[in-house]
Image 1 (cartoon, rainbow, N blue to C red):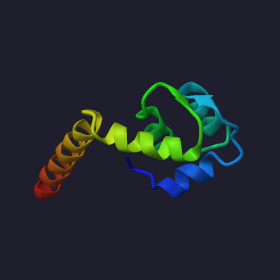
Image 2: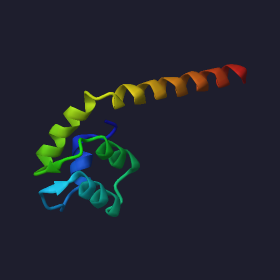
Image 3: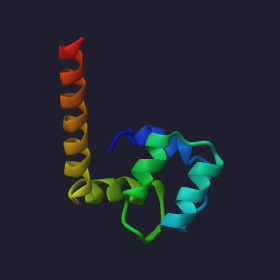
Image 4: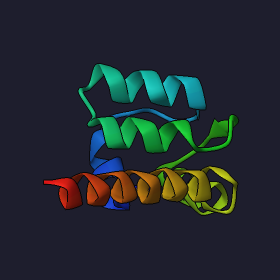
Length: 89
């Protein structure tokens, strides 16, 4: 998760529950949520959500999935490439 819970809650302010994941994503996008928030919302399980607290709990679930280590690995690879590039300068 790249966004904090307060930022996500702010991005979803005014949404009425219950909502499916797709509806939450559509709402966030239509209300100009940041790319990080939309990306984080894409990582939550595909189900119905009944409240902001329900979404916050889902972030705990999504952290345990493989997506987070994959992102970390991608970040590490990017840092390694950047360091190699800086060494050559």
